[in-house]
Image (cartoon, rainbow, N blue to C red; front, side, top):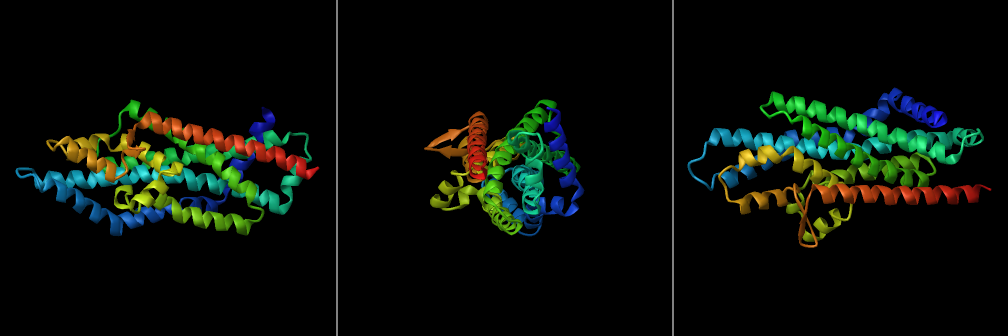
Length: 303
């Protein structure tokens, strides 16, 4: 275990010392914030107000404030979910550099099994993601409260941290597979560019899943990203959705949740947080098993 902790700590130190790596791992989050500030937020708020205005006798000022807070909560949930993708990927840059510079071969010659070395990279990726996603949760919640949001309860915080841990596990395992396939820093950079571009779309952040075509929506549901985003949105928007749409028919509220990707239908059945949590956990385990198989294969080819 001492060897495992040493390798994990070494990888974490290298990542957190590299300010450029941290910045680029958060670049997708920065892009989402900028897009929401200048483009998407206004249209989303207007869409919510358009629904509320169909019902006379409502407080227009309160509705506008609640609509803004709802969009903020929805955006914060998406940011936390995509951070797990980009941060885990950035941490694996350490492994790519080790491979390119020959340090990985030197590490392999040490009296440490490849399994422990691999576990050290994966654990560092997972820990960094959990730390940064939790920090993102704290920062976004503080900002939201300053704008008038209600602070989450202690139980909700526990639930969200658990979600962060599972979501980060999925991408720590998935990004290891991609890192095994990338042989050069250029290839890894190219993969990072593609994923950084797609993650916002696949998570239904730039375009809500209900606004996309059926084909695109089904494609999004074939990736774990949308389920992680939906899981966070369900918890983080629960109270503000109820406040914003208070007094409206349940059918309208349900349709809004579906369009915005707060709830998802799979095979014409709405799935809940528990199903999404289990689905992500299973995906992570599958990716982990495939990674172990790839590691065993690489051992044979190196002989």
